Image 1 (cartoon, rainbow, N blue to C red):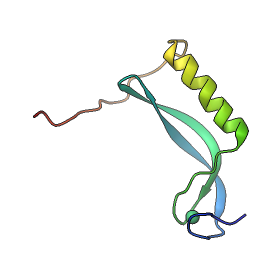
Image 2: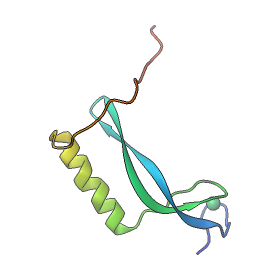
Image 3: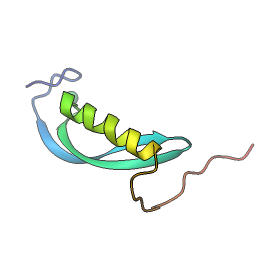
Image 4: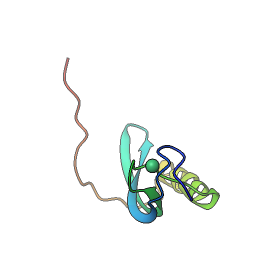
Length: 77
Ligand SMILES: [Zn+2]
Protein backbone atom coordinates (compact mmCIF):
# COMPACT_ATOMS: atom_id res chain seq x y z
CA UNK A 1 0.00 0.00 0.00
CA UNK A 2 1.35 3.39 -1.03
CA UNK A 3 0.45 6.66 0.54
CA UNK A 4 -1.99 8.57 -1.67
CA UNK A 5 -0.57 11.88 -0.48
CA UNK A 6 3.21 11.52 -0.65
CA UNK A 7 3.53 8.19 -2.49
CA UNK A 8 5.65 6.87 0.37
CA UNK A 9 5.65 3.19 1.28
CA UNK A 10 6.06 3.44 5.03
CA UNK A 11 2.52 2.98 6.19
CA UNK A 12 2.39 1.28 9.57
CA UNK A 13 -0.27 0.72 12.15
CA UNK A 14 0.13 3.21 14.93
CA UNK A 15 -1.57 4.17 18.16
CA UNK A 16 -2.87 7.66 17.68
CA UNK A 17 -5.37 9.89 19.35
CA UNK A 18 -8.22 10.97 17.17
CA UNK A 19 -9.51 14.42 17.98
CA UNK A 20 -13.27 14.56 18.34
CA UNK A 21 -15.10 17.85 18.68
CA UNK A 22 -18.05 17.48 21.02
CA UNK A 23 -19.83 20.79 21.37
CA UNK A 24 -17.11 23.21 22.46
CA UNK A 25 -14.93 20.43 23.86
CA UNK A 26 -12.24 18.29 22.31
CA UNK A 27 -12.09 14.60 23.24
CA UNK A 28 -9.07 12.48 22.33
CA UNK A 29 -10.05 8.97 21.38
CA UNK A 30 -7.24 6.39 21.20
CA UNK A 31 -7.33 4.26 18.04
CA UNK A 32 -4.93 2.03 16.16
CA UNK A 33 -4.91 2.73 12.42
CA UNK A 34 -2.45 2.77 9.51
CA UNK A 35 -0.50 6.03 9.42
CA UNK A 36 2.02 7.17 6.81
CA UNK A 37 5.28 7.64 8.68
CA UNK A 38 6.52 10.07 6.03
CA UNK A 39 3.73 12.64 5.88
CA UNK A 40 1.46 11.59 8.73
CA UNK A 41 -1.61 10.89 6.60
CA UNK A 42 -4.08 8.70 8.48
CA UNK A 43 -5.99 5.89 6.83
CA UNK A 44 -9.40 5.09 8.17
CA UNK A 45 -11.17 1.91 7.15
CA UNK A 46 -14.95 1.55 7.26
CA UNK A 47 -14.90 -0.14 10.64
CA UNK A 48 -12.86 2.68 12.16
CA UNK A 49 -15.16 5.34 10.70
CA UNK A 50 -18.15 3.47 12.09
CA UNK A 51 -16.46 3.19 15.47
CA UNK A 52 -15.70 6.93 15.52
CA UNK A 53 -19.31 7.73 14.59
CA UNK A 54 -20.64 5.45 17.34
CA UNK A 55 -18.29 6.88 19.94
CA UNK A 56 -19.10 10.43 18.80
CA UNK A 57 -22.76 9.70 19.39
CA UNK A 58 -22.07 8.16 22.81
CA UNK A 59 -19.95 11.18 23.74
CA UNK A 60 -22.71 13.60 22.72
CA UNK A 61 -25.12 11.66 24.91
CA UNK A 62 -22.70 11.84 27.84
CA UNK A 63 -22.34 8.05 28.06
CA UNK A 64 -18.54 7.96 28.24
CA UNK A 65 -16.47 8.52 31.37
CA UNK A 66 -13.80 11.13 30.65
CA UNK A 67 -10.81 12.62 32.40
CA UNK A 68 -9.90 16.25 32.03
CA UNK A 69 -6.30 16.43 30.85
CA UNK A 70 -5.93 20.10 30.04
CA UNK A 71 -7.68 23.18 28.84
CA UNK A 72 -8.39 24.64 25.47
CA UNK A 73 -7.67 28.34 25.57
CA UNK A 74 -8.24 31.14 23.13
CA UNK A 75 -6.83 34.65 22.86
CA UNK A 76 -9.09 37.17 24.47
CA UNK A 77 -9.99 40.00 22.09
ZN1 LIG B 1 2.44 9.90 3.10
